[in-house]
Image (cartoon, rainbow, N blue to C red; front, side, top):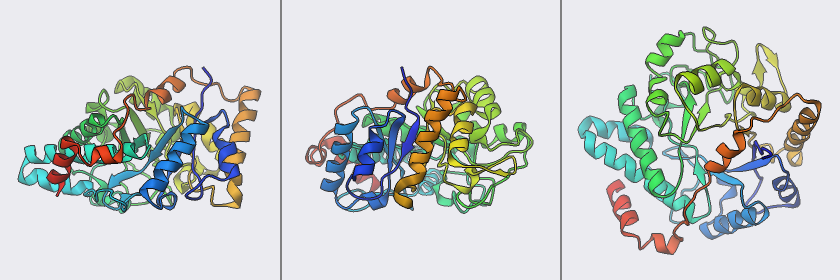
Length: 352
């Protein structure tokens, strides 16, 4: 089965001719939405329906974690708490915290699915070392045991609404201060030290998570390449040592941390090939539809076609089935049905 590894974005609240052309490209398997793509709930539902009419099997995704990373906040969407709030609740009442985490996941997923969105890149498994500004209150807790249990509860809530989970950012972004959006963070700890702490939630949840997103962080005592470009991290550690069998997404290849490989500036196609060859099933290139009518997106798609023709990219046989496995298998409730659904109403009340 041919593999469609590229996850791209669109510029506005409606599809234009370039969007439609790219969505029909055989290498495009996913679309990530941002706040700029949201005007109203009806508009979002219409947009996702049009996308699915072009590509019924495309995976429509968004970052809807809660707190400061929540793309859709108006039109009836519940304001979800930052992950740290669940960790604080754990310190007061552990069982209540796990229930709140499940409620958060359920509300998050049910609302998105009612509008035609298939996947949220959640939960965040990074530990709160108090160093990372980009992670900060997106982290559930400092203790890997607490973070893992709360993340598992949140993933359970997602699954109750028919949505899969994506743990990020493997093997942990919380220890470094630098923001990989604008810099190349370096974590100088040993493999043993990383797996003893930040890597633990990924190990404990290896059967529970449907997908994982690696960090654009370099761990030089393990590999000179960032984790998302490292076969050692993705295949030897994540797949073989931790036994993870789900999908692996690259983080955004437009980020600064993805554009430097072993000290050298690289382009989007080289970055995508490095991620795919290291073991990623899907590669994200975000926010490029806003620049030069999306020229970078076309450059990437053309570059991957040429790489495949040259034999520089050999498609992993299981990657496409992993992508398809992330698509919801149940029919979602409509928004009106959701507003009358007892489970949803109880979950919202629990978050109140």
